Amino acid sequence: MSETLRPHRYTDAEIAAVYRVIAERRDMRHFVPTPVAPELLTKVLQAAHQAPSVGLMQPWRFIRIIDTTTRKNIHQLVDAERAKTAQAIGEFETTARMAEFLRLKVEGILDCGELLVAALCNDRERHIFGRRTLPEMDLASVSCAIQNMWLAARAEGLGMGWVSIFDPVALGQLLNMPSEAKPIAVLCLGHVNSFYKEPMLVETGWKTARPLADMVMENSWDSSK
Amino acid sequence: MSETLRPHRYTDAEIAAVYRVIAERRDMRHFVPTPVAPELLTKVLQAAHQAPSVGLMQPWRFIRIIDTTTRKNIHQLVDAERAKTAQAIGEFETTARMAEFLRLKVEGILDCGELLVAALCNDRERHIFGRRTLPEMDLASVSCAIQNMWLAARAEGLGMGWVSIFDPVALGQLLNMPSEAKPIAVLCLGHVNSFYKEPMLVETGWKTARPLADMVMENSWDSSK
Image (tube, rainbow over all chains, first blue to last red; front, side):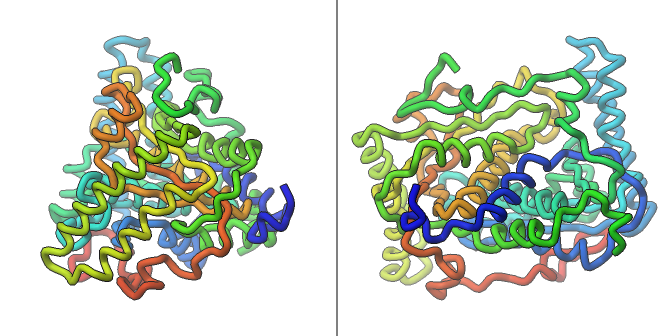
């Protein structure tokens, strides 16, 4: 396509960097405990903060966990839910490898350089644009913020993991969250020895990713996909 | 920080490209009707498809709207909800400027080169990892996919808009979606004359963005923020 039609196109090198980071982002669980420099943390949080939000409600909140006891309590809370999940899965699959896999998903919480809890803050009365029929757009906005942060971290050479195995009510209580807030992610951020080449579930042989073609339809739903 | 500690760091130019695209992504509503090249559409959808998903469930689905009548029907459906939203807002704010603003939010649907509907497909029985207590992680994954697509499009010089003003049940019916699927976005994608310098709500003076510092807390919820 001619450049005239796309005057706002980035340079080839810039475009390649954007696709590279999208392809190389991984949900990390293995960290080295080196601290994350404060200015680096601010940069990746600033990337999160540039996410879109319906009605500019900016519903994302980040709680930085500095206190060691709080970090241990969060680990314990996640581990309790891990055990319940393993049990629920165990009802219809073999458990030993799965239990090991889930154990790995949790241990990053103790090792990562920075632990953050991401929450949505939902003062819905004050923000009505486009959320009358899709009130869950606040979660969508926080998710976009986390994806931005993930990409920025990867480019900076930092790994990030989004842990979603926890009881949100229990975590909210632990962190004194009010009723209009809900934790949606325990984010492990930090230096890593290496990035996984493939998503962990693929690397460990649990799952095979489906191709894009399975996800794209034309004009209406295609139930053959 | 020394490079030894961050051996996986991208080059300065690559990092700058990642931050640039995060900063310059805009929720676009103004398009020129030039078609989007098919290979370009595939590239940005492939970026979406590289999003994270809990348990590798890959819950995103994209319906490409090629049929003109279907596009008009979607526009009509969104416009109906726009009118209801304007009315709801009108109960406590002045309406004329707001009505005009909302009108702008809808018209891109008719002009953009490519119209897509993004949906989540929620066969929850088959995917149990980390979704026992946070079943809405499917929406989070689709949102990350859309954010990837948005960034890739911006780097390619294409604008994208996420329209969320619609009744999801009505849109699902229009596109013959089964009960386990839910539309969460009408995506307008296409060539643009220019990108907004600031989010539309800021440019038009409706809102002021809050700074990052308001969103970051330490160790527990800070109700002063």
